[in-house]
Length: 307
Ligand SMILES: O=c1ccn([C@@H]2O[C@H](COP(=O)(O)O)[C@@H](O)[C@H]2O)c(=O)[nH]1
Image 1: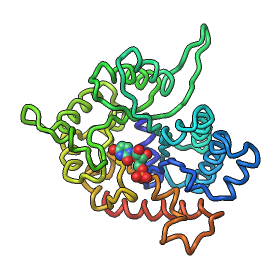
Image 2 (image 1 turned 90 degrees about the vertical axis):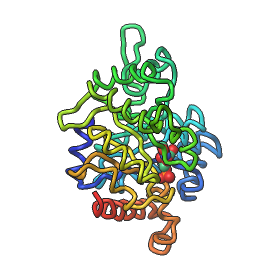
Image 3 (image 1 turned 45 degrees about the vertical axis):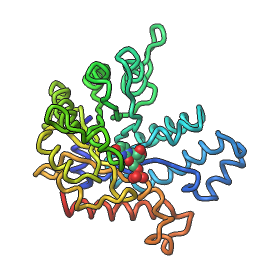
Image 4 (image 1 turned 60 degrees about the vertical axis):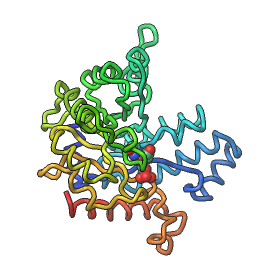
C-alpha cells in the first residue's frame, strides 16, 4: 500500500491528505435538517449527517488527492451509529479510489493488539468464514508499549499489504513533556524514530519506503528535519498544517530530496474551509464542498513550493 500511496502522490502531484473529522458545528444546517427529519435529533441523525457531509467533501476532492484520514474519535463518540458512519465513509472513499488512513491510535498488549489489527487491517474469523471489517489501508498506532504491541499489526501489513503510521513526535503543544526527555543521552522521539525505522526494515515496499511509517508533527520543524535524516526510508504522516498553525515552510524538512517521504494532513482547514474568512464571502453553505476543493488546491500549491 505504501507503493500505491507513492504512485498516487506522484500522479496527483499532491502530498495532501484530507482529514475527515466531522463535527456537528461544521455540518451545514440543510444537511442536518435532512438527517434529523429521517432519524430525529438522535445519535443516528448525527451519524447520518456526518456521512452525507463526508460524501460531499469526497465528491469534491477525490480527483485531487491521494488519501483521506478519517479520525475515528469523531465517529466513535456517537456509538454504533457513529461507527457505521465511519465504515460507510471508508467504503465510499475507497469506491472513489482514495487511500484511507484510519486515525485510530491503538496501543495494547500483543494478544489484544491482534484483535485490533485483525479488525482494522486484517480479517476476522467467524467459524470457517473470514471478514474484512473496517477496511482501512493504513492505521495509526501508539508505540508506548514497545515492539510486541506493534508486531501483530506488522504481520497483517505484510500479509495484506497494509500500512502503519506510528506516533514518533506528535504535533500537540505538550508533546515534549515525554517525547523530548533525554534518556541515555538521546531524545525519546529520536530513540522511538530509530526503533520504528528498525521495525519497518522487513516490510519494505518496491519504491524504497517501508510499510511501517511514522507520525511526525508539522509544528516541530527542527525535530522533523532531524527525524527525516535518521529515518530516510520511513514515510511520514504529518499533521499540524493549517488549524494548528504550521505553515508550508515548517514542512520542508519532512520531505526527502526527491520530494517524497511525507504526506501532510489538514482536517479543519479543508472540511470547514467554507466557514473561514477567506472562503465565506465566496461560497454559500450549500457550496461547502467547493470551498473544500479550493482549500485543497491552495494547500497542494503551497506544499509543492517546499517539497
Ligand atoms: O500528532 C498528531 C497526531 C494526530 N493528529 C490528528 O490529526 C488531525 C489534525 O486535525 P486539524 O484539524 O488539521 O488540526 C486530527 O485528527 C488529530 O487527531 C494530530 O493533530 N497530531
